[in-house]
Length: 349
Image (cartoon, rainbow, N blue to C red; front, side, top):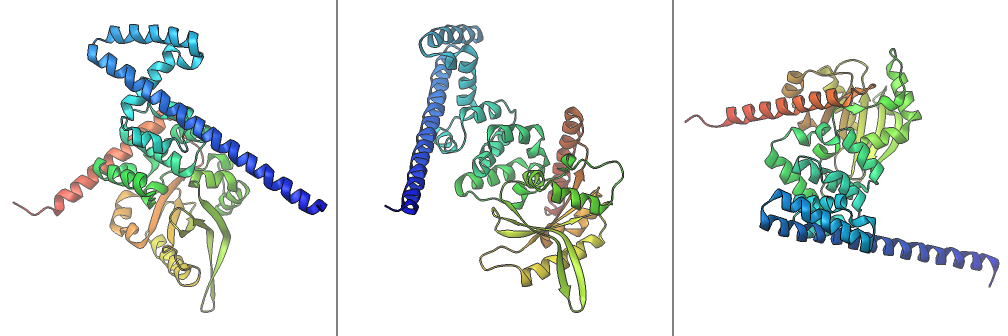
């Protein structure tokens, strides 16, 4: 056997061994998570029969001591309560089994204590689709990703519908992907900067910027030249998003959004659809990143019908409590406006 063939064979064998080890690890992880779910379900059934909180505390403490002595620290009192919570908030074993292909116990440990079932399902399904590790999941939860998506501003029944479609069909929508605001604190911008400074910093920190955009974005071009007749125009940033199978045009604005920005982005999108869109791709979508925006202007322009999203960017992130208050207020107002709009469309009695 020649040295080249020997080297190729060795490489192939290494890959086979590595893949087999990964399969074993995945199967072991899935089995462990399902075991924890079954333990939680079984204990919960016993505790619910008694309907006494003190009984539950006592029985879990006794079980934790006995199981730890026999099987190790993974079955401590604290972990048993985590398992009970796990079975309580994820009652369907089929959903749990589907999630274990990508989520380990450490993922579930972060998700199960979120207070909102829609939020839990959002993080679990996005974690599955985008294959986040535990550290990334923790960051997404900490940055209140769910509250920043357009999805969170919808009525609960519509949120549930989109999450069910995501679970059943792996179907991503712009409302799941795009967010507002975007956190660009990693760019390290000072108090005074120009649009080119933001663009330069994004290119310099492209990995972090794409992490903020979401998994599946591929950088295509900076200052994309758009030539029409004898005139040249330049689009700030162009990406391709695999999850939606479409080009994403990003226009950066140092100032607040203005109505005229819509026409400029529509121009870019139509050019991209004509000259850059490939067969099998969806029509390009635009994201205008600006310092701020006014609610009524955005509503009157009906930007989503043109495939345009507008979001603000923050170069400095607020403390968590203030951020939480601000985002929850935005969600509440958006849902109230949507309810009022829907009510106005109902025929008069």
